Structures are given as structure tokens and as C-alpha cells.
Length: 209
Length: 209
Image (tube, rainbow over all chains, first blue to last red; front, side):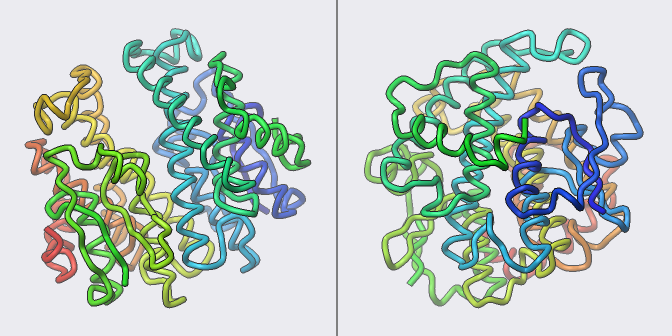
């Protein structure tokens, strides 16, 4: 059994739920809710599992805890020796990891910084330090990242090529989070909008929020 | 031939040079210098290769450009179908990617932010926006990340287990950069210091700067 500590409705938990569904592994997963709004992710018991204090965490049967979505997805994708989301050849792997990192650092993490620093975020008890100017800069960086992906999607159906991959998962979580935090991204991004409509209809994605 | 656009002496270029040497691929690589100090990485010709405007970039024989060190290392490590730096099993891959991400986001990227925002960085022509308070916070975050790795290294010889991996490469580039920017990290980090001494003596690492 794969134990997954998360909070449904948040972007990073959604990434792992999508990967589980794409791999057909839902039946093997047990979800343990972590009340992030109450700060449970910052308490000692959870920090034992992930010192970074973030959901989701995958706990293996031997007690090993895997944090960071890209690492969890690498695990799930290689469980059966048939990678579907992270590429098969060296070149496929490289392009997927490149676009995944751009989507993570350049979009999703940047929007998360905007949310925690330039909006009320999760409220004053959780947001103990805010840097609004950096938050605004991070939003602008995320918008630049999304415009980059719009240009990529003018040339291929998915972010890293023909197939839906880990990079698409990260980026769609980013676009979905942009909508949640009220960042208007669609202007001049027709290719991205078409892609977003399409990927949101995948059963794995529709069920993840 | 593997064309690599980089600037020797910088942390991210060093990561790829170490991976090349660990894989025994140096003979297949041609290095093309990019003058980052003169802003060459922000000019149109280079942005064609990497819209993020950062070195290193690996250009394949077919013209495909791979940016982001973790993606380049995935490529090099899978070229011969014998991964050495990114793990063989699902669990090895997961732990390596988890610690790699922690070393990247939590140490190296954080120190880079400190350098560009709370020090003169690359000088006023390149550093067109600075947020010193965020820079200081990022330095504190990097120090917390290094203390985390000290605790990890109390339990195993390398960051992700018995073997030297991509996670060690990222983290050692982080520690080396901490020294370059004058961040005093060693206090209370005896395990990290022992590991750093040891990994810096690897021939691949000693030649990378």
C-alpha cells in the first residue's frame, strides 16, 4: 500500500493524484489528510516525514518517506518499469525534466510565492513573514513562464512533445492555481488555453481536485 | 558531439562538468564559452537556446537544446542506458530526485537569490532589480537546508544513500557557492564538512572549477 499524506484541492497534492490515476495505481493508494489550514504540516510529527513541511508525502511500506512531487512521480512512474510520464529515452527524459523544472520553478513555485507574499495567503497564523514586492515580481515571472509555454504549445500538442507527461502535470497545476489566486493569464495565450481546456478533461485530471 | 554552452567557474556549469566526468563523456563534449559577466546570456542569440537566459545549455547533434542541470544530467546519465547518477530502481530514483530538489531549491537557488539580491552580485548592469530583504531570507533558508543535509549525512555516506549521485553534485555546488559568496556554513555541520572534503577530492569535482 502507498500511503499518501496530502490535502485534496491543493496544487501539489493534485499533481500526485493525477500521476497515480494516469498509472492506474489509485487502488494501491491510501490518502491520509493533513490539515494544512490548521498548520498540521508544520508540527513535529509531520516534519519527521518531510522536514520541508509540505504536502504531499509518499510513505513506502518500509517507512521511507518521499517528498517533492517530481520525486514521487519518478517513483510511481518507475514502479512497473514502464515509464509513461517521465520518458523512455535519454532525450525524452531530458526534455520532460527541462520543461517540468521550468513549470515548477518558473510557474507553480512563482505563483505560490505570489500567493504567500502578495495576498493574504493562508492567513496571518501561517503567513508569518510576507514580502509583497517579491510576491508581485514572482507573479510577473509566472506570467512570463506561461507565455513561454504558450510559444512551446504552438509547436507541439503537449509541453514536452507528443505525449502527456510530468511536465504537463506541473504546468496544469500551475494554470489551475493561477485561476485560484486570481491571476489573469489567458490574454495572448491561445495555445496555452487550448491545451489547458484539453488536459483538464482527462479523467485523471478532472478527478484530482 | 555534445555542445555545451557554459562559463567555467560558475556553480551550474560545474554540475554538468562533474556529471560528464563521472560518466566518462568528457571526450565527447565541446565547450562554447558564454560571457555571463558581459550579459551574453541575455542576448537574443543565446535566448534562442535557453529562454530562461541561464548557463549551461546542452545542444544535441539534431539542434535540440537542453537547459536545466537536472535535465542535462538525466540526459547524460541515460545516454548509455546505465544510470550511475540518477538511480536504477524506482526507490533510488525517488530519493535522488527528492534530495536533488531540496539541494537545488533549498540551497543552490536560495544562495543564488542571496547573491543577486543581498550582495552586489554580478554588478549594476546585470542586477537591474534587487530585493535585499528577500536575499537575506534566502540565505537563512539555504543555511537551514545545509543543516538538514548535515543531519542526513549523519546517517549515510552520500546525500541519497551509499552512492555518489546527482543530489551530491547539486549540494556540493551549493556548498562551494556558499564559500564563494562568503556565507559561513560550517558551524555545527561536522557531517556536512566531512562529506564536502571527501567529495571535493573526486577527480570529476576537482577538475570542474
